[in-house]
Amino acid sequence: MVPLLFAHHRFDIVAPAALYWPARNALLVADLHLEKASFFAGHGQMLPPYDSQATLQDLADLIRVTGAQTVFCLGDNYHDDGGEERLEKAAAQQLAGMTATLEWVWITGNHDRDVAGLWGGSVVEEWTGDGLALRHQASANSKLPEISGHYHPKVRIAVRNRHVSRRCFVKGRHHLILPAFGVLTGGMAAHDPVIEACVGGPAEAIIGLKDKPVRFPLPFADRTIEIVDDRQFALPLATTGQ
Image 1: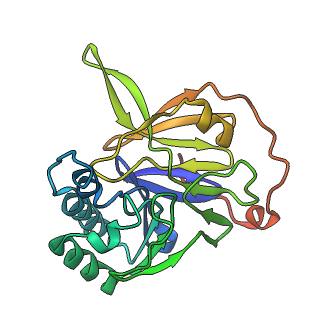
Image 2 (image 1 turned 90 degrees about the horizontal axis):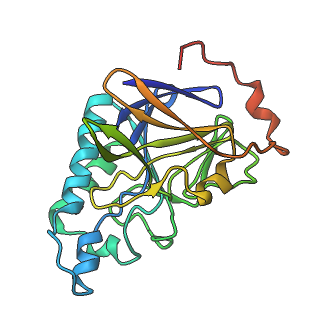
């Protein structure tokens, strides 16, 4: 696990696209996009129909490794509003088994505003607690420091004389954007102006390696935070290093 400090809270990067929150024994993921393959198949583009099983198995593996008792899914849990009912049988059984034994929070996204928790779990538009807001899409005017998804940030890096794209976290003073967790998700460049408009500077893209974070400064313009919730600054500052 790779430690990550944000808004006076300690998190751990536990996979290319997941955070563990020790204080709440919780796992945070975003943009599962379950049943994306079946959605495209319904529109004539055939993809292997195993994306939901693969994504949920990856999530189950992280739950086992971390021992998390709570899971926050930060929106676009399904690729479309029909994906929840369309979830294939084996994946639905696996998901129902996990939600039956864990506190499971579905945060709605732009792809799945009508998610109903058909396979278990509770459904909210956003979650707030411990001086943080968890939501799907970042808001430049958030009164609380926020953790979100939606943009699927990626960064291109040089590896062995070639450039490869890697999922990354985007961290600013007031915003932390998670990469997409689903196996069939694309991505947006971490330095994209759309992300800058939400996060502002200073900011960085972070990739969690096995034992350390790799940080890439982002060329975002500085933006003064004019409105914040004073409750956040009553929290004790974590003492562990970043």
